[in-house]
Image 1 (cartoon, rainbow, N blue to C red):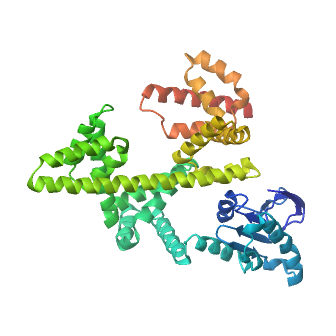
Image 2: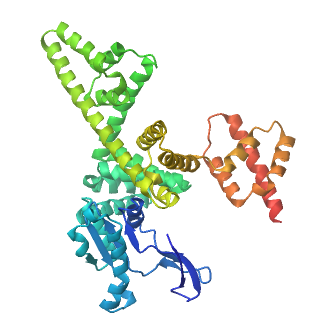
Image 3: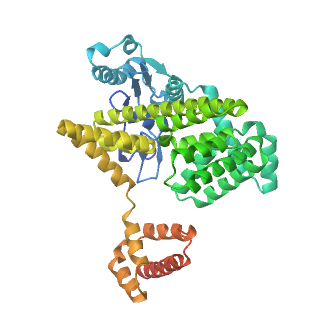
Length: 445
């Protein structure tokens, strides 16, 4: 992301901004997410406080989808020949990044986008996300906002019943993600309000009631597996699955105990089928077919997720700026990516590929740093372990410089969301908060 010195669009004072004009997904896969997020080319002026999107030419290139899109802001008011002079070098840079054998005809027919929104929609459509799908999602977000803004539970329930047909699996998925985003951002009030919306939907809407009922069945299946303990045998697992009262509970057990459903497991099931008679034999045969379908589908999903993780890792390995690329893809990191990373790192070390091993280790280190708790947590833990008030005051004095507004904000979050059911720990946390608040106030006097 190149630093560029420009004049503030509002007050014309010189400022430094990060400007991206070429989004080449082939060179850096994380650029796609950055582009779609809209969080790019944003200027912030320290003089007048202006913050907004800079008007600048943009080229988007995705060789896999054979997309070459150009956008030139109308507000720049430049003639066509001047526009081509500014866009041309960006297209040339995208073309030169490809080996000769991968330079296809689409590179000579760049598509001109009239608006930035049109450009984003074109990228999404190439991924199978149509305008109609985007419009439908926006309607769900609008409905969610209306529900969250309801003045009473009764009003919320009435609105939910009126819009029953719009509340489906996707609606609940979006709602859950918004709750998670609010919690991770420290917005307790929004998370609590959205949680209230979720509870109303679960008891008043058609789909919500189905989800609630399924949740009970899932919990029942989980309890059955937990009751069997860590040393559950294949015979015990088979008994649980055969006795499961619904297909949903069977599927939950399969997803949680897939490693135990191997050749030996199915051999035991086949033995029981051979000994059974009549309707029971037919039921067990149908169960075997269903289990084979479920395990096959699950294995295919795992393979697909691992393939996606491998593709993401390969893209990161080619990124010119690994730190920036990692920052863009951190939300997409999951257990599948970590598994692929570990396997690739072991393979590189075994092959003696020092260059690849070093870069994979760098990716691993960035992930560890990103997942590590902030240093304030270590200080709070030290304070909580103080034996008495004198020891606590001593620790406070030692870390006086670290008791910043950010530190107090973290303590406040911990106070409003108790971290344990142990009243003694919560009481200690209250004392730490009181002492830190007193010290903070004294420092500001």
